[in-house]
Image (cartoon, rainbow, N blue to C red; front, side):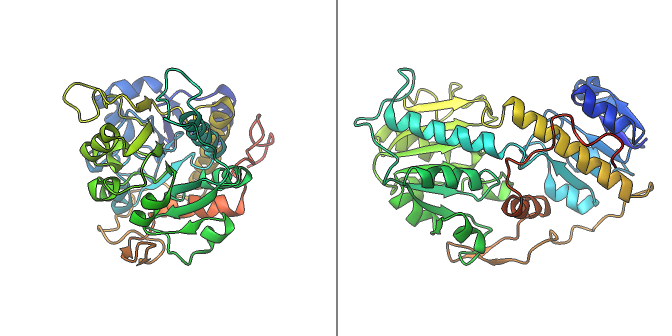
Length: 359
């Protein structure tokens, strides 16, 4: 079998893939772990939903799997390091949701700055984006349209990414001044966090940063909540050091009793709404389908070769904006980020997908 699809996808996309490859379409497998493992045994590629954890244990049941894909952009359910060690390519719709995420981030910042919704935290004094300093933590595909939007408002842009050198051309192209993380948080009126989630970034934004950030700072994040030290974020919000925060996170239990953020009044959480638009979904599903088609057409069936746990392939390590040695971008992130420079994220496949008969 060429491709297992365990997530509902649009009929035109399914038909297009079925015309090119042997496809098993079984969304119900996402809710049956045993049956899913059995189905993975002889497939070359799998399109899986975010509810399925792809790790070393699951990959052990898939000896010929060479590609794992998901329509969404998050990596929370994907152990990228395990996939690299196993020689499994990771494909996702990153970049397809860039415009939607940028609009969400901008809208959230404006809503918090102006207090336009009575259900949101109200600032002591409404402020403008014109002349404000906005910090971007993480250069993601959404950073390109977001930086253009913020520049249009007359904002000064500063940024930090632990895997992008301060001399990288991306900063200049997007009109963002690179700064160390501490300096960014000390100078920014509002902060947009878009850093892709990897376990090594857990607690990256902690007490030593939030305890000394610019007073009355606003934070909007579409990244995993674990990028923050939650105790430190709760303390910064309760003290008023951070005026308000908006977390668009997959972690729906942030407000549960016993969690650090429970009962914090000036915190807004949403369940991964940033990239959820009709247009973004359409772009993402066609993007993933086209990548799957290309990879399946290139690879030959057979047991995959393991890479033996060596270093992640891609760019070599370099010194990050903070002055410390930065880790290389994992392969998917490097490719997607560079693609977002050369290809405007709003340029999507046609609504009907590839031209009939194209390959």
